[in-house]
Image 1 (tube, rainbow over the protein chains, first blue to last red):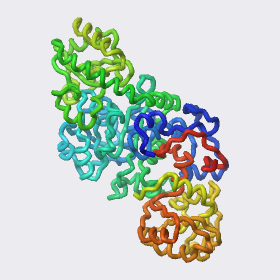
Image 2 (cartoon, each protein chain N blue to C red):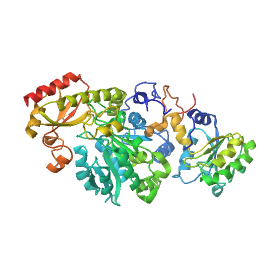
Image 3 (cartoon, helix red, strand yellow):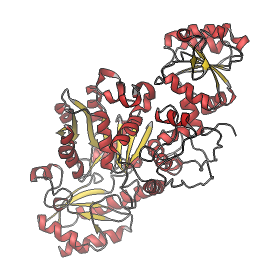
Image 4 (cartoon, each protein chain N blue to C red):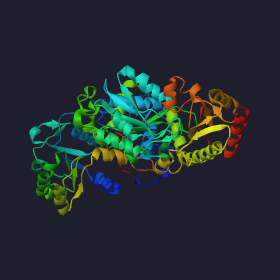
Length: 425
Length: 170
């Protein structure tokens, strides 16, 4: 039945009528814990011998619907819902890495991810080597014997650069490490990285998946194709697990072992569980993902074209524009549109950028993307301000850069707001 | 991976009552123990087969040395052994086919042996390879959704519950 189309899966995947009541919408299982049938059932659950619910830090039936839905939309084997996109990245790497290990990551990442990788993870003795998302060979050059994963964004934040996923997946395959793709800005409506050779997908579901700017959430999708057994490189998966009586997760759970490990070790031990209420809101958002995402893309292209012609604008970086360096890759990987997040440069540098965000009346000045509302931010003074000048530039967040997340309002209203604010800046 | 229709798998799981599990393990952290535990909970009768443990018990069930010793009836033989062991097990099953009433040869995840499959099909048996009945039961009943697994199914009806979790019976 994998033949159901994307719109159908967006509405239905993972959701059955509630087994207890027949409720058609997914109920919010707002409970910490679930009763055991008897002591034997409890033991079997704790040993992972039977399917079932124990405690909402590790699993919850509302969250499980969201997990299955994202796995279906990405074409993966299994999913896991966690408290935030950052929590998803933490749990993925916690499953892959040992102290002293390295990842190779694109330097064009969301600023928060750059901080997490370079600062937060260093405390775990996990280290990052940076590569250029526009140059797949740069990932190969950064590999070392300690590399355990390659990490990219499908559409890079904030510049809207489209990554050549298949080429980077080839580098990962050759190196025998999984390719992890943050698919937040594309959403599976635009790009399904597993189809291009990625092994694991992560999301900040806070963005287009939830789509309404009301819930923080993160998702992990296990593609189910990576061989975790070779070379003993991933001992969390291939070696006996002391906290499960010596069970080997890879041997026991096969093609869903990575997702299970993220759940029964990562979520269990690190604890960033998603609240069922937020899972419900993200699920409701996903039902309209295909409709919203197309509208986001159409509006963004119209806005980018208009900005490109504006005399107060120095440049526009949007892969949907025909002369953009990423346009060829966008046509290949994301033919339905180039997403809704992109940057442009205002003439007048840092001050002009600040004046623009102060002058808008419809756009909201805030640090999020992927809301129904149009959003604007000046990365140099906000999301990327912790980075040094060189890092800002290489992350596409120089002093004149303004980032938009174009919403689903009327196109002409969005453009009129930018017009008046640019005229005043 | 061999492909089977959902209807084919569902019909086997619905019609099977008794399973001989060849290669059953007494180690409670082995995959075969997981599957046996789960299927017992769902009401299947399981006859474990393992010559090394003959006469002992796994999960309260007497272990038999070979399919020759297993009491009838047996609807399905579930092979938890390496692929190269499969043809000999199928030959033994076919020798006992009429006494036991065997209808299905099921080979576990990772177990693919075309020779064994051809022998069984020629004798009119259903053959499933490279699948786990626990995982397939969990897919059909919806229970595996609790682990976020993509079931590749859409179910517009309320599942019926009995005993420990969901059931395929309607």
